Image (cartoon, rainbow, N blue to C red):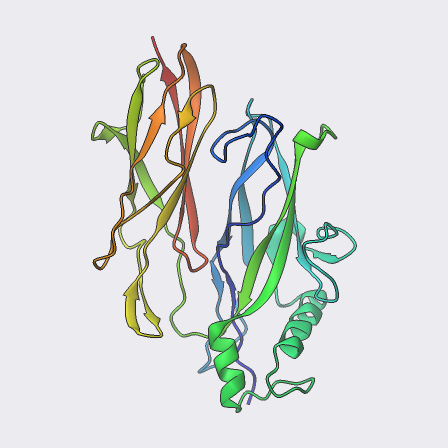
Length: 292
């Protein structure tokens, strides 16, 4: 009997670079920023009933700059014989993912996966026993891998590069997760097209695509995902509420975000990134004018 393994991208809010000397806000865009990384599909599914290997996972990034210049993003699967957060992945401590694609057909990826399974083997041996309940439990909960990324605008400056890590879980399931999506951003109950007033507080509301909040099996029974949002904007305005979330199953939440518009006319970009807390990620961008 073969070990049943899944690889899923768990959307962990990865480490971003430290704030600038004048305390850059999380929602501000003053340098190269990676606002979100999405895997499609968000889970690499190996059905525990069939043992069939999953197909490849493709990574994409929402990488932005203040002036909309192009950004190149590279990815690597971090080897487990070192610290994935030591800055060497991508690099000497990582397996490059060409085109941002992770495939179990790659022997180097298989080697890292074997390391992860050995490290998490509750039996203490080099080969997990799929018949051991402890092994099955470990796979169902998820065994972590790490994907490193580097985003660069090619300038060679500190502000032109961001490096970070996203966690990847190896797990077994028959109910794969899917990426959430935002269909629209509303202002005054209408699609955000502008122009926005100068020097005013406005409220944005995301429109979640139907089916984005999925029901999944938790330890205490079925549960609906409580999706949450991160808000960003370019220009001279200020996002007053960086985080928001949907209410669900009696748990409170407010998906809206307040934004203070710039005090002079300009064109801005607004981004909202949605996460489901289980590896699914999506985003939407709107470009609007402020002022006449």
